[in-house]
Length: 315
Length: 136
Image 1 (cartoon, one colour):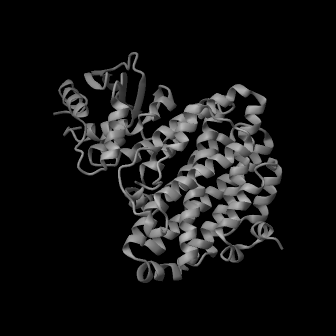
Image 2: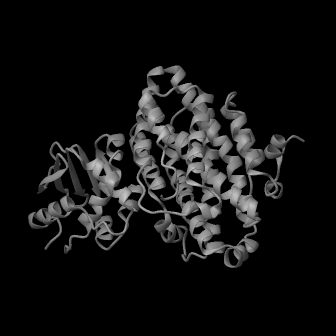
Image 3: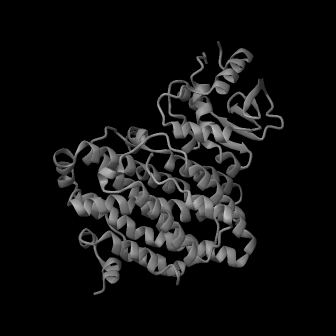
């Protein structure tokens, strides 16, 4: 069985043995071909996993006894973004499902369920491993918000306001493309995959947090479907009406303008990453999606991409 | 001083013009805000949903030059509204960034992308506004 077939077909236990680089390769393998929405839905049915099957007992020991304070701080600082991110996309995605083809709507129902499951994954991790207090999902989210950096607050907020804009007319092509650029291209395609690569590489190289590694690797495989759906949506939208490319550009200008704001410094070097490596990773994630889908950028946005802030999680 | 009165509005104008204290965050963050604010010219109407009253703040060339309480947002570039509960939580110390991220203030009018290009300037202005003591 090839490495990528193993990614596609592994059950939850098997996902814990995979290398994150193979999962990221799996995310990008189909970007040139871009499967249709029905194929992605079929994949969801076979790849769905149960978040309550994860065992965090060894993670809790690693967290308390094996990880240094600097490592814990950096890990919480970067993963808190996606604790909130999963909640945010779960809540803001249903409005996008109201538009598009019937196949798109059926597929989208699976992505909403994925995002809800990912929210539970982080809720369990923050309760059972990090030890945050809270009687409800919201209470745990509130407890972790202080760790969320502007890198996430801006894009997640933008998505919330774009969802409100889309609510007025869920079929409006320009609003759908702006929303899709923020969600599928930037949040899923750049931020999520970068966070996955950083935290999962750390876990694998140090042999820490096996429950987190298994669950977030499974999440990353889910992201493959999300990114492929999103890139197909953007590609098809622009092919149908090339003027929509301007909506992608305008949204990217806003996302990249926000990207350079950061109010706190976080020591990602304790997780084994230099700022320059993080910057290269983010730029690479963005360029791979754009090139594969055939989205061209004007010079001013290319300059903004080159100036991406290297420290993804707070400076 | 009572919330959403002319006296409170003028105090808020001075507070957002001065901005919040800068000791807790990186200098680069405030540089971003200074860049966003330089030459910023727009009017924000911030409303209370239950009363229909708006705090109208006018920015010109990076300075907050006027503040008024009105029952009409007029021609404000950005009209945002929130319920009493959100305004109370902000006054009691809720994180203004989380309030924006969770869309607790709704953008009723205005270009979303343009609004977000200066979003942390808005968040810090909301922080400065929330620190002005006021009775409900």
